[in-house]
Image 1: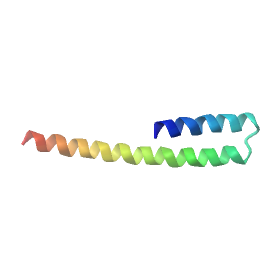
Image 2: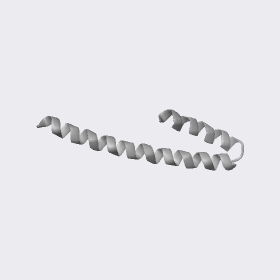
Image 3: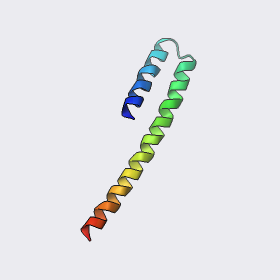
Length: 58
């Protein structure tokens, strides 16, 4: 997934060079969606880590 985020970053930079057209707004929207997906995955991973860490201690 990080590879996709980097690809969309490059697409957004190229679109910015060409004048912030429709491609830039589409890339920014996709980047925003990917950001929130990563944020949700981070929270889920942290919760699972805390739950598994506590169960091992018992």
